[in-house]
Amino acid sequence: MKKGIHPDYHPVVFQDASTGTAFLTRSTAVSSRTVTWSDGNTYPLIVVDVTNESHPFWTGGRRVLDTAGRVEKFHRRYGKRGDR
Image (cartoon, rainbow, N blue to C red):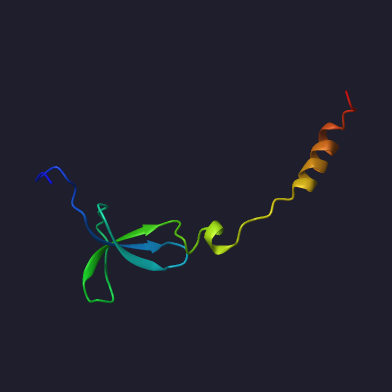
């Protein structure tokens, strides 16, 4: 690899804002906040909104849409048209 053209790739801790779970990985992201990890080292801390711990797709908390209710509401609001 050429020297001086690649960003600094270093260990970083990402923390989920809603669940508080954290994981250590490597990234080019930087942060002024730090955290002491279980290995005793201090790493930059990046707080993110969504991870696999809080995303509805991965947690099984997906909403089921009431499509039948939506169709009926549409027909009540705009009326039903006859077959053409």
